[in-house]
Structures are given as structure tokens and as C-alpha cells.
Amino acid sequence: MKLLITREIPDAGIKILEQYPSIEIDYRKGPPLSEEALLKAVVGVDAILPVIPDKITQKIIEAAGQNLKIIAHYAVGYDNIDIETATKNKVYVSNTPGDLTESVAEFTLGLIYALSKNIVTADKFVRNGNYQFWDPMLFLGPTLRNKVLGIIGMGRIGQHLARLAHGGLKMKILYSDPKEHIDIEKECDAKKVELEELLTNSDFVSLNCPLIESTRHLINQKELELMKPTAYLINTARGPIVNEAALYEALKNNTIEGAALDVFEDEPSLYNGLTSLNNIILTPHIASATREARIQMARMAAQNIIDVLIKGTAPTNLVNMELADKIGKIA
Ligand code: GLV
Image (cartoon, rainbow, N blue to C red; front, side, top):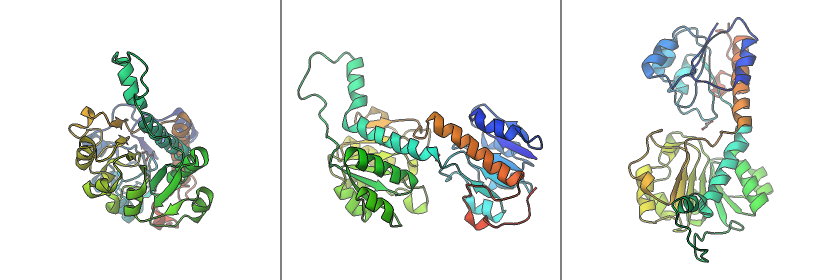
């Protein structure tokens, strides 16, 4: 059985897979594969372990052919995978939640601190030799206690963020989500509101929802105009949830106080002008980059592959639930 791993991942996952000699691993450790290289590499494979920049399109799934049984994604978000085609072809898709939840929530909180305490701009200020004397009015920002954190998408990550912000910092939590989350409402005194109310009332707005058709450009000019002039926007979810052109204008015109982006509309390209702004923090999609999360993600992806190729079951972290009781087409 053939497995394509498109990028280097922690050894912990490779070691698990190597215990099964019937799995022949094509392990690519270089830069992301071009579409052309990916099209060639997938031919005849039983499993693909892709990472975030890999676009697993209909073309790729069809090029892999009849043997393909699982796409074991090394990430929690799977908007880069054509789930519809995978499901139609009875190919399982799995993802890697777990320690990543805490890592992304912690990183988001880190961005909330960095923005409100001016940590990045103050660092640049000192490096540039501008620190001449202590100044009572220098780099003033808000305290966090009692400030309102609006969480868009109250899934695993949103819930953990709510716990950290409410439990630790005594922030007030608003959230918008298609579902009600009674447990987190009780635990964090969180209140479910419409998006408009969330944007109008929050001091910090954190995006923690998946990228789907209804969340593409969810934050656009109109939404940014609803936010307080003192509010901050944080995106650790997926770039296209925010219209970067509208965000650029809002930051340039100080419609909002600041923003932090860990993800971008056309990753890794940046919208023209973003880097010239002082009121934005830009990081290279590293919200889940803790050693613990990345090792656990490797183990989970490996286990999902073993579930399917060796045990003949659905993967533990199945995404396309329509295939939960699929039978046949298993090695
Ligand atoms: C990271 O962005 C992930 O989806 O795992």
C-alpha cells in the first residue's frame, strides 16, 4: 500500500507508520509540491497525508485513482480539500484536532496581549534607538479585565479561548455561532448574540470559525465599520474570512485600533500595503505551532491512516461523516 506524505512532519508520526512494512512511504521533505508535482506523486496511492498549502482538488483526487482510501490531513481546518469529491469517491478525509486546540487559543490570547500592550511596536521602538527617556504617556493601551471579547465561532478553539480569557483575565465573553453552547455559557458567563451585536460591543473580536461559503469575507467594510474605534480584530482561523482590502482601509483610517493576522487571504502573499501599517501584527500561520501540538498532529494523522489501511475501519478523526459506515473499498 502506498502513502504519500507531502512535507516533513515530526518523527513521532513516521515512527508509528514505519511499524507497518506493508505501507510503502513516499516521504517528501522539500518545499510544497507544485500542482504538477502533486498530480504525479499521487498516482496510484492508497493514502495521502497533505499539509495546509496542498490543494487537494478534484483533479488531484481523480489523478490518485481508485486505490485512494484516505486523505489524512495534517491540520484541523480542511478548506484546502475538496470534501465533496472525496466523499463522492468514497475517500475518507480526517483531520487533527487535539493539543492544537490549546495551542491556537493560547496564541490568540498572545495576540490579544501583544496588540493591547503594544509589545511588537514597542520592541521596534527600542530597537530603532527611540527610547530616550521614560514617558508616562508612551504606548498606552487598555487593561483586559472586564473588556469584551467577541468570539466568532464557538468550537473547540473558541471555547478554550473563552475559558482562558474569562477564567484568567475576567474578560466578558460574547459569541456568535450557528449553535448554542450552553456549557460554555454557564462556565464563562458567555452570551450568544447576532454578529452585528458582537461587532458593535466587543473590544476584541477573534475569528475562530471554519472557512466555508457563508464565512468567506464575513468581515468586510460594513462589519469593520460596526466595530468600536478602540477595538482590535484577531484572525487565527483562515485568511479569506476577512476582506484584506477592507481591513487595510479600516486600519489606515483608524476605523479600528488594530489587528493581528496569522492567516492571509492569498497565503503566503500579503495584501499590498499591510506591512507599512503600524497597527497590525503579522505572523506566518503559526497559531498551532507548539511542539506538543505538532507531535500530536503527526501521531493522529498516522493513526487515521492505520485505522483505514490496516484496521479497515473509518479513521478516528473522520471529517466526511457521510462515510462513517462506508463498507468496501478497504485494503
Ligand atoms: C491550522 O491552521 C490548522 O487548521 O490546523
